[in-house]
Picture (tube, rainbow, N blue to C red):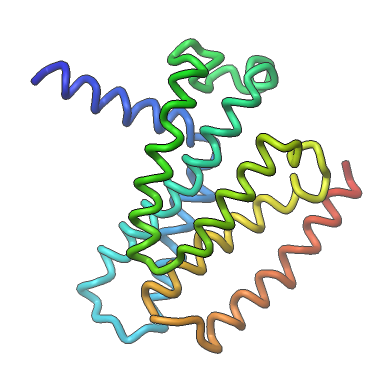
Length: 192
């Protein structure tokens, strides 16, 4: 029993160490967007805690799946810039990180199936693979687009889950997001 509890606590701790750098923009953003989508829905107030939890977990799984791959391919860079991450700090090996990726995908797939956003899950996995394994992180446009794109991947399935479909309010929000977010991609890229 003690070893099982130790294993669970280790997984929680390891997960924290993997997503620590992206915790606020993914977990908190997922929870906050859940609140925002709920505020224009007809859902009763009693559903709000569940919506916040689902948003936070969805944000966590989105970041976790991406960060596992990113840290697996970026070990040398992390040794210099982010030595607190699990592989450079010696908390685990690259092989141990690699083994966790399909499990995180399966858990995320289950949640996204419930949310009704399978297409967004598929797009996120493809984007994560292109970014991490096919050199996308070396392309200025793909690299700077990541933060904006991940926000859409987190928010659209939550909106669909809470409100049933993407209505005029959601289209307005996403348009404003794209209108304000995409120029950041270009301005940031020129500043590099």
